Image (cartoon, rainbow, N blue to C red; front, side, top):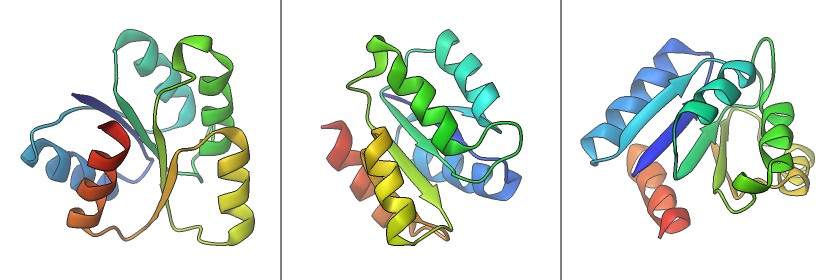
Length: 119
């Protein structure tokens, strides 16, 4: 199973990759939404985990563009972000996000949610 992570923080990206690879997942990464769209076109993925606030293209715009492609309508997408307000979560739901996790993330909780949305 392959997961695309999209986050502009090198530290968070490293922690995500280490956690997911240790659990047996294949991971491809991008550091913003623009790069995420390019990586997505080149890789078949089973899940996207994206930050909200990023340079060049943020998570909301990225997920909106992903959802506009019929090939990705059923693809699970999780936001992993410091944003915790109900307004942000509602925007996420409105544009088609599957779930929301807050940073800093607990590795066990992350893996539990990943398993839930991919099985």
